[in-house]
Image (cartoon, rainbow, N blue to C red; front, side, top):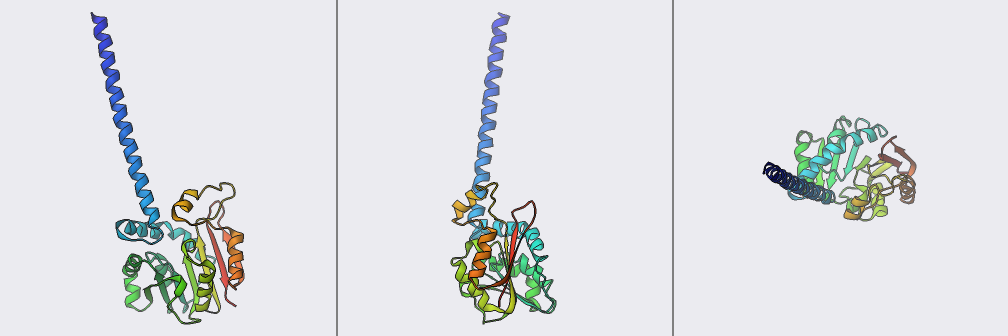
Length: 245
């Protein structure tokens, strides 16, 4: 009799453990599904941030691109008094950094996302009030500025999304002064060791990671001179610098 009770007790314990494991597995799968959904929503808002997920993406970009931008700017000194444009300014973090560098100069930021413009204006409220920064809604393909206005133009993690990359580089050149400089900053550098590294993002957003040789060739085709590229060791960070004749 005691043996039967022991067997029954064992069966109940096993059943309990199986139910518990099943519930924990189900909860883990649900958590994974939620995290995957969040990731996809954020990624989709990298192109043109909008709504709730757009706000989260802007916050993520401001934080996630900060160190990358700082590194790139070590190769791209800004002089006091310079007039600078940041293309695809997102949440305005780069505009804010540039305002600290231009002294008595001025920084313009453009983005084609209305939400980004509002967020960038909020972050740079003090700079805007003292006429040191101006944020405008605009596209890189049709910059609302006169010829030869800027000493320097920056673009952090936005080149992938430009609709006409060659034409857009030439449009930027139109607004640069003679000898003016362009800085393009990338995190998505194609990795020959891991060619599928960016595959999921590329497929979801219909973009392509850049290569060092490809960027140098594109800038040359657009008419730029003194083209240099820098890659941070141990990362896929790259920046490309070029000058207008």
